[in-house]
Length: 256
Ligand code: MF3
Ligand code: CO
Image 1 (cartoon, protein in one colour):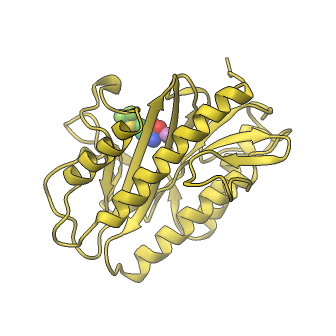
Image 2 (image 1 turned 90 degrees about the horizontal axis):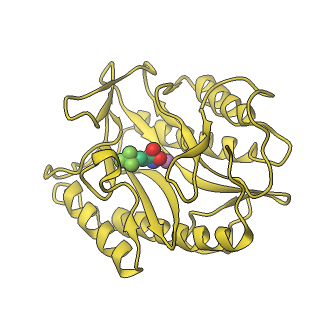
């Protein structure tokens, strides 16, 4: 069942989304090549969330052991923070959820560490734009398949691939609600988008094959061919006026 949120519930999610955005901004700003570790960012993120009276959505979710997922280079998603310093040239996906006043908000962004090579620059540019292409389809009267089709078309026409084994999702009182929001598929198919729906659109874009492998820790997902991957995510509110991004620092540019 897809749960429609009331305006006062959306207001809670919007406030939580601002905390998510603050965590991403402050963590990204804290990265010093050759020095900062994922564990440091995880601690920083958890402190920021706690300072607002929230808890990290991911911690203990199905046994997940950290506040954030931090996924570097060939790690697609669900990287567990470790003590290895980021190096110049890495790309780092920071993924964070905040639970507060009964609701979740969830976003992710992939950042370059210092100077990255041209292929990495293109991967980041195309992946971020793929998210925007998906968001642009998140309109009343469209269907979930319109989002995935737009993301897939944009990514593949730029020579990259979209991960199939993980998808976006509805979000609200639960971190993962219906509907599933794949980053691939057919336009015109799937659930109808209605006002008050809240969904996470989160393309995972690979340089090479779309195939992924889960490591022995049961969380870390890496590309099957060892090439790099990027991940961008926003929590999006479907409104009659168009998509509203709930995971922004300020409300000024929330209308997409
Ligand atoms: N953004 C991811 C998702 O929505 C992160 C989940 S991490 C987990 O699925 F630990 F909570 F699973
Ligand atoms: Co998500």
